Image (cartoon, rainbow, N blue to C red; front, top):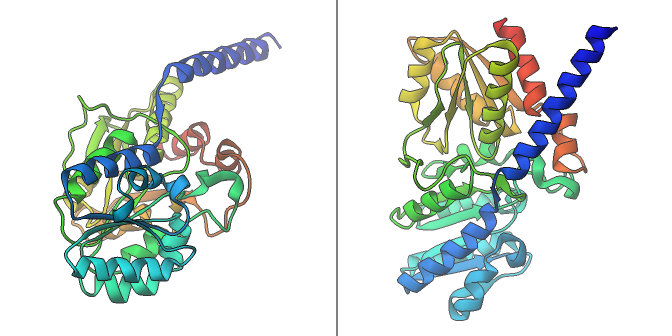
Length: 336
């Protein structure tokens, strides 16, 4: 009885301390960074054009629109037209950024992205917000859990999923120098910082080891990289499991060399993503490992073969067993 009370007190103490620490951590909006960065681009270059499908307040392209009305086009709720018109402007010599929610930007306009944009290898950047489960209360119809999978299948397109506001800025800066199709996937909710401008060692083509470890590697992407770090912290504190954390911001083409280096030294690789486990990061890692000379076990964490539903982001992560604590409990079963 006494031991149970002690365990409960320790658990309560950890919860209180975590809440205190979380309040001191910094959250930022990827969407705001996107809008503000577009406005800076517009000041530097007259060939920048921004387009939206009637969601500019949510995607934050309205920041650009207020400063450069003559270079902003709202096509209405017509995502297929959005991509087609963007391609026309690209052929006329413009560098075009288009935005909508990830579900609509990729799902409704997939044919135009494939046949008009990527087939012709044009300079159009699709920057989609509201991806994954953390869209929250908007529910299954708005929670893009398949967008990486369907975009990854198209030739000639690069795919990025930044972890935080700092990496979002770096990827956007790189996009200004890259003259071909690109898909950038942003979250709806504010996210904790993983990097700072001082410690981000950004290479647009490479993964980053952001925590070293000897027992296994967890490879993550997008906003879930912060959750991967939290998972590693729990495993170290409670089970003395030393988990390496690798962040992959560029999902296509994927950094095969870094993944194979992990497979060389680890018996188990875990993957974590705010996406279906079918066709996303986990599937890409499996493809790389299986084709290498260093096959190892790969365990995927993400949304199983199901739709999302309405709820707060925290409620949804708990329901789909994707909180850091739940992931840590699953990982320890493979390593203890």
